[in-house]
Length: 373
Image (tube, rainbow, N blue to C red):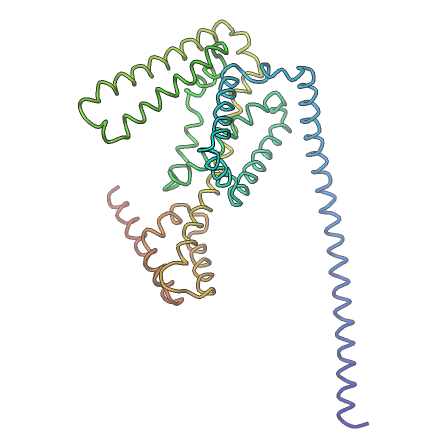
C-alpha cells in the first residue's frame, strides 16, 4: 500500500469513529430530551385538562343559560345596552348600504384588522382570558359575568391599551392609571349603567346626548366659534349636558335605593369589583404594549438618515435595548436626546458616542433634580 492509500484509510476510520461518537451523543440528547419532554408534557396535560374543563363549564353553562332563557336578549342586556346596540346596528347598516361610505367602511375594517393589530387583539384576549381563568379558579368569576367581561374588554381594555401609546410619556402615567381604578366615582358609574330608563327612553336619550356632545366638541374645536358671540351658545350646551347628566344620576340613585336588596347581593358586589380587578391587572399588559410601541418607533426611525448596513442596524437595536431594557422613561427619552446622532451614525463608534452622550445628559438632568429638591 502506498502512503496516500494509508492516509485515506485512516481518514475513513476517523470519520467512522466521529460518526459513532456523534450518534452516541445524539442518542443521549434524544433520551434526555424525551424524558424531559414527557415530564413537561405531563404537566401541560394536567394544565390543559384544567383549562378544558373550565372552557367546557363556560360553554355548557352559557349554552344552558341561553337555552333556558330561549335567547331572550332583554334578559342578557339592559335597556341602555340594548338601545345602544340598536342604534349601532342602524348606523352600521346605513354605512354599508350607502354607496358613498361603503368603500370607506371596508378600508376602515382593513386598518382595524391589520396583521399587527390583529396579533395585538389576540394577545389582549389571551392575557384577559388568563386573568379570567385565575378569577374562575378562586371562585370569583362566573358565566353571569361574561357580558361584563366582554363590555370591559371592548370599551375599556382595548381603548386603554391604545391610549397608552399617545399619553404615556413616563412611568407616572401607569401609576395614575392604577390609582384611577380605585376612585369612588366607579361605584356611581356602575349604578348609572345598571339602573336605566325604559327602552323607549334610552332610544331617545342616546341620540340626544350624542348630538349635545358633538355640538360641544364642534364649538370647542372649530376656529369660527372661538369668539365672544359663541360663548353664550357654548354655555347653553354645557348647561344642557350637565342637567341631563344630573337627571340620569338622580334617576339611577332613586332606582338603586328602591332596589337596595338586590344591590346587597354577592353577584352585584362581584359586578362592581370585576372591572376594577380587570383594569388593575391589565396595567402590566398596557405597560409592556407601550414599551414595545416605544421600541418599535425607535427601530423604524433608525432605518432613515444616513445609509446603514444590516449589521449596523442590528447592532444599534441591541445597544438601545441593553441601554433601555424595561426602563420606560429611557425608551421615551432616548430618541428625543440622541435620535439625531443615531440617524447620522455610519459605524459602531458613532453609536457608542450617541449612547455615551445620552448617559451624560441623563446624569446632568438627575443632578439638577437632586439640587432643586
